[in-house]
Length: 146
Image (cartoon, rainbow, N blue to C red; front, side, top):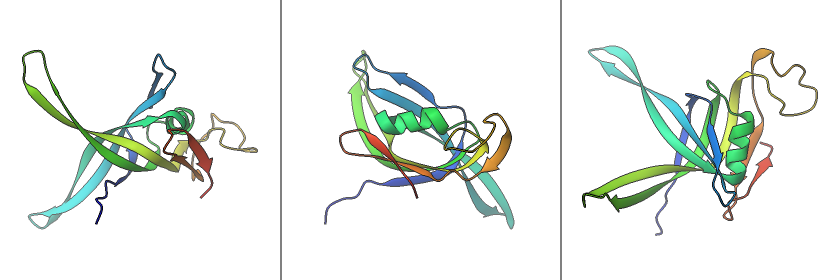
């Protein structure tokens, strides 16, 4: 059987995505996602928050830049990308990056222009955003309805 490298995170965005472009024009968005976990400790439920730093490219990065804001609930389909490097002192470091392949906006705390007839984009409210982005293998995502 071939291996499978998939991670699905559902959580709230901790801060507005950091979006930039490389000198070659590739767009990159970094986003922090908070997930909550509950467990029993001495008979009481205790909730804790885990933070995940994830990266998106090109079309998916564009989607995050345009629609994702601090506090929004999103679902991301990701892959883990391990890599290692040696620092100037010769010490080897290991890191695992979370690379977003697809993102779905689940709830937004503010209304943004995601379609016609949404009214004032600065009016605060909670809404479901029926948009998903699928990053194709060539790194160009496309918007897909649910």
